Length: 270
Ligand code: GLY
Image 1 (cartoon, protein in one colour):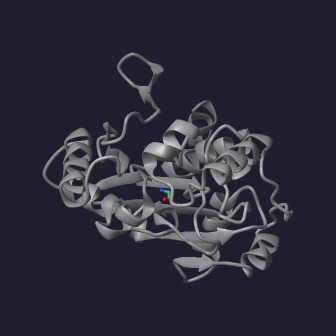
Image 2 (tube, rainbow, N blue to C red):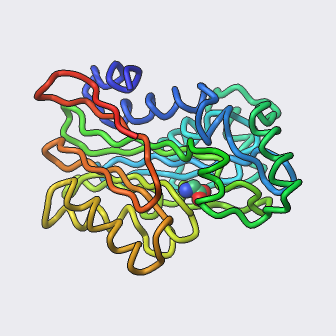
């Protein structure tokens, strides 16, 4: 949170969102970057995306196996190419061009331990409930509006435990795991990527901000996915053009923190 706030001093919500996500990727405490969950083959494959409301600019990266900071790679793709999604082995070349440290991604000791438990129990098709019991820290994301008044979002994840190698989830896909529109606000999702993609959850949440504040939009978006795809599917964070934040989820819990302007301090909830 502090790293995100500090990065926003230059006025850009996008810089703040990326810095917050990058910090969490490095921490090893979440299902992203150094703490990512593993595929059915026990490997780390990361997804991430960034998006700004200015011109609907954004990009996602999927199946990244060469850097613990896919959110920075997504930023590079957004700023240096005309594409919105790059996946797979060639990400290594782009990570080098982006000046990122390119390395073999090793499972964290904690992820290796959980992988052994899952394999033992033959839980190859992970459900959100099962994963939450084994690993309550999920996908990470951030939404922000800076003094530039442009809503922005960033997201990063290891995806789902025991996913098929090569699977790409919502966190790489604009409109699903992330969305930002300068007429509406920004949103970022967590949960079961396949369900989030089916209902284009983050874009839907932003559309709801045309008729309500960030909290109303978040609640409506989760109401929508709960009805369409069932409970235990997703959580979402939102920010509207006035900088008001919202959060809603249909899972057991969703950790979140925000800067409370009235109280002048960071507030956290689980
Ligand atoms: N929401 C993260 C994923 O399913 O990939």
